[in-house]
Image (cartoon, rainbow, N blue to C red; front, side, top):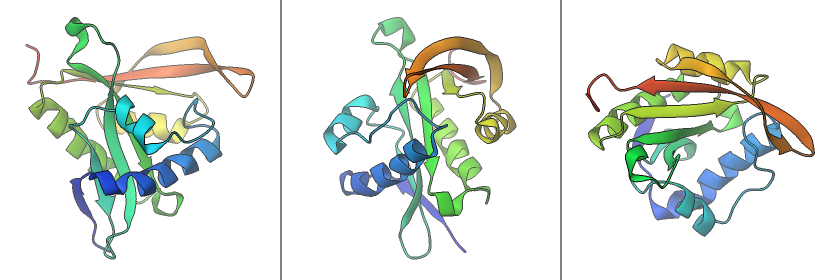
Length: 165
C-alpha cells in the first residue's frame, strides 16, 4: 500500500480528532479524557509543522503536530510532539515516516528541541521515540492525574544538530 504525507488542512480536523479520540480511548497516550473541539485543538498547536498521512484511498490514517511548551520567548524553539496513528495502521512503520517529516520540518521552522512526555506503560511509544533519535531525560513522578489516578511520565527529547548552535 502507498501512503502520502501532506500538510494538514482545516477540513482534516474532524478525522484528526477521530484518531486522537482512539488514543484517548486507549488510556495510555494522553492525559486528555475527551477530544477537544476543532477550535480548541487548533489553538493548542502551532500552525506550522502539521502533517497528515493518507492511504491510497485518501483516508487520513495518522497525523502529527507541535505544541508550544511555554509562552516565554526564550523557549520559542522548543516544542512538544504529538503523533497519532489510527489503530488499524499501527506497527507498520508509518509513525517513523511521519516523525521524520516532522523533525525535518521543525528544523526548517527554527525549532532546536522537540520533547515528548509519555506514560511509562506506553513502552511502544517510548521505544518508537528512542528509535527516532529521542533520548530519555528522566521520569517526572506524579505529574498529573488521569481519571483520579496519579500518573508518571517519561520525558524524552531530541536536540537538533543544525538549529540553535
